Length: 257
Image (tube, rainbow, N blue to C red):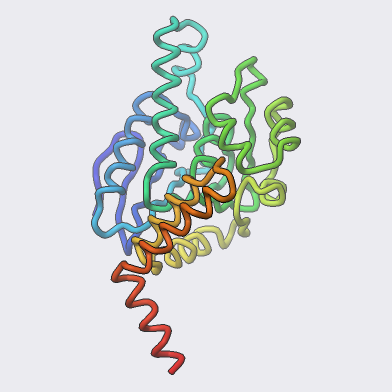
């Protein structure tokens, strides 16, 4: 199953909705049409009755190099309304990714810089080639990585977040994994195969359990401990009542008997 877009590819197969940024000649840079197409593709993944997991990758050598020249020109010459509209459009994309009940797996090969690094950070899980590079480089042009800062701060420690944001430094995949920015690093020659195995592993999980787990994980962010645990107790009770859980428990008990 596939859908037509101008700046990305969307395909569904074996329980995975795969979104591919498809501007390799522009290093998959983000502009207004690309951001709107990403939102539309994510809605397709959400509405799909067969896709349990959404994969996000870039065509060619790089995942995403950040804003393209047209977007940077708007920063240099736009008025207040244009700046607010652009900021809120990007905000809507990241919030949509966080709120989408299906897991989103970012698969990063090559560079993920500035807004591209933010896009990777907005994914629930991030897999990277051992040649991948990550950087919040906005400060190099006197810009602020403001919208993605909250997600970065939730992924890594305060001191490391401060270093990445204030220096605009670029780090390799191994370092990104070490500090908790990404989940796993795979050899470049095995990258596609290992990513497919990861996606397949997630599609085998119960869809409702995946949804409830993701929603709860982000809902308890910032809650006091007791409130978070009480929220978890409510979800625990709801999960027990799902047909998927009952069948899963029955299968487990059958194996043990």
